[in-house]
Length: 146
Image (tube, rainbow, N blue to C red; front, side):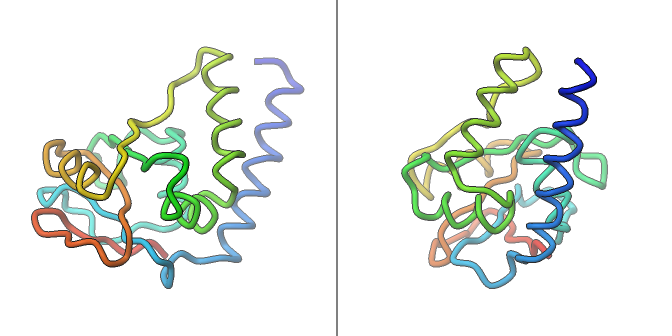
């Protein structure tokens, strides 16, 4: 990684941290969910951002994380991206294009519905996802993101 790329990454992450701190996710139209066996009950917005952007591979409790997104056309994804990731879905897509191009990582799995996200989270011990605020979440754990 060049010095310019490092500077750009540092500045970008600083801006996102400020945006996320200014817009907490507590009162949004989505729920963040984890596998019912995961000991996590809450995450800071910063930790959630790092898990979904794969900048951190593990939850604070040491469990390996496996994030999952809704389809990019989803209004729930738009709300989640803005509130937790601090950017619009298009900007998140651009971030992933950069990660792929530089050989760093690939984006999280994408599911087309709340039911598919819930099924994925149920089936994977380290999974973390989000669903609409009205989704039935039996079999997974809803966590707070602050």
